[in-house]
Image (cartoon, rainbow, N blue to C red; front, side, top):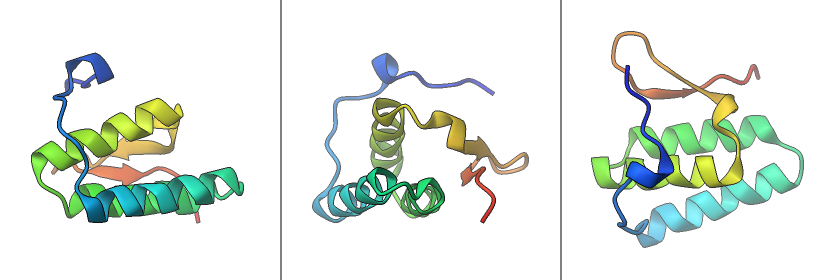
Length: 84
């Protein structure tokens, strides 16, 4: 599976709802809740269009938290790798 880096991602913006949800997830991360951050962003990623998914992945890479996520072996969907 090919990994997309932040320099390869399109320059689209998060829509208003996703931007709000990403901000909430980042707030949880600042409060020390990495699990909430990972589960929230994986849910946003699953329910978004391809362009929005790329922006969610960009936000994750900007935060330096890519190690909290994995890929589903069959579907390739981004999933939280943090145990609850």
